[in-house]
Length: 484
Image (tube, rainbow, N blue to C red; front, top):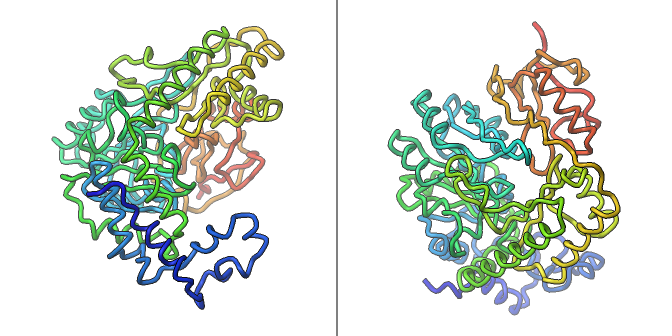
């Protein structure tokens, strides 16, 4: 197929040039009905923010330009099928789970999974079998799943329908996806990959293996994170040999995805696919080169540790994504969240996340060398101005094996009462508690609240982490299953 084509974009340009008079939605009518918004976004943007119609196809049942764009993307990513998603990769992750599992089925899943996956369990009634990821106790970060732990979970739960894998984690850590896929398939299980941060794996050289290349059955790819499309746009890929019905997946997607698919998001996926399919090797090399340079310069400052492939151990760190600029900060006496805040508030530098021990910069083709120099200079100055006595390693309670008492769905919809969070030990949570980003649960619905978990929640709050997931915005009260 001609990867220089952009069917959706081309159709939109024809529509724009035709000067169609709109008596349909959206109500801004090519921007004329909302001048302030048009001044803000621009006339071109407003003129192509349109409704589904015959020349532009329909996302719920694509038969022309959207279908052609999806076929081009499938080829570019080495997939059997590709679905354009406009409800974010959250919707892609949930559609994967709903496509291969039904209520009461088990899914083997890493504990450091994004909340979108556990939300899928609440929606579907699927039962999680958690695999505890490795933990680097110095850095305080979750790692991948060791193949041995996954195989043990498979042997102990032969009735599980699928294995879910992060590829990579937020911090750039990859599990041995090829081997996990082979073992899962030998036991009749599907493999689902969360590749929210792995778009570039499909186009760069010497990258960790992509889900489709590893033989996984489905993958959720956040094209907007590192692939250049607009926020909220995503791909859902199905492997060539997955044996999963295209019609079934489309039906699952249509359960929750909007019927008013944004053509701004769709065209951004179309254009970004073309950009990477035709220039991907060059683009990814530039990102790796800039990230490697930044790592060298940060490590030269002293006190910080920008880590990379030296962490690889062939087990729970099978590979490392070199485009991730993850930096350990506690050796300058500051938690990552404090460095994150200083960078934003005092230096106008927005990092992707700050946690108790690290800050993370997401690198992409949009980064300029002078911006990297500015980041390095700011980190050097922060060490000089704010550095304190070296802090100890992170005591990471977040990834202990949870005690699952109820399914996430049963807890979320069960009879509930509200307690002060620090008085809830021994009760079953009906809510999430997580630091966001990265959105990995400390506790999830259906799990037992233990003193250790409550201690970690309190520590995270006091450390300045942005806590989310609960109805109580102050994170002082939590909903638990009511006593009979």
